[in-house]
Structure formats: structure tokens, C-alpha cells
Length: 88
Image 1: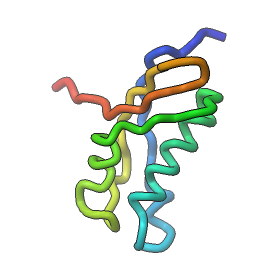
Image 2: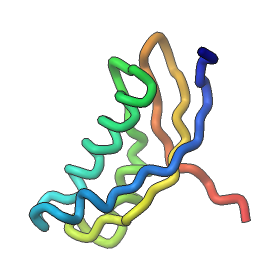
Image 3: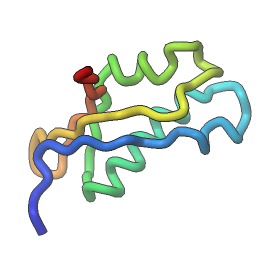
Image 4: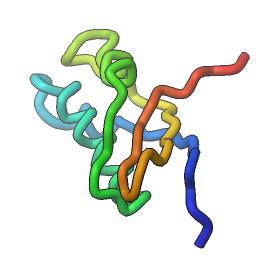
């Protein structure tokens, strides 16, 4: 299988909104980390602070429903997740 060094994906965060209202942004960041680790078979996933801030831009209780991210390979089974810049 081909290595994925730089990959763009959209992560749906609607499942986060079904739980408790408190701490949704923290759960959303953990969910992004879990999805990337499962998709890329990663041992360590590093989240960019700008991505964490954009997930909770409406507050900690009102997370966005979808987020577009770029996953870059940093080292052996270490991946960096950044917010994708829209090109419109």
C-alpha cells in the first residue's frame, strides 16, 4: 500500500454533539486524534493548536460539525494534524 505523507480529509464531529454539553471541545480533539490514529495506524498524533482553537471557535460547548484537516507524516508512525486552508 502506498504511504500517505500528506493527506487531506474531512472529519465529521456530529457524534460529539450527542453527549453531554460540557467538555465538547476536549472530546472533539480526542476524537480527531482517535480517527487519525486509526486511519494511519499511528502511535503518536500531534494536533496543531490552531486546529484545536478552530474546533471550539464558538465556545467549548458549541463545536463545529465538520473540520477539514491535513495530515502530514513527521516521523516513523508520528503524524501532525493541521487545519486545511480553504482555497477559494
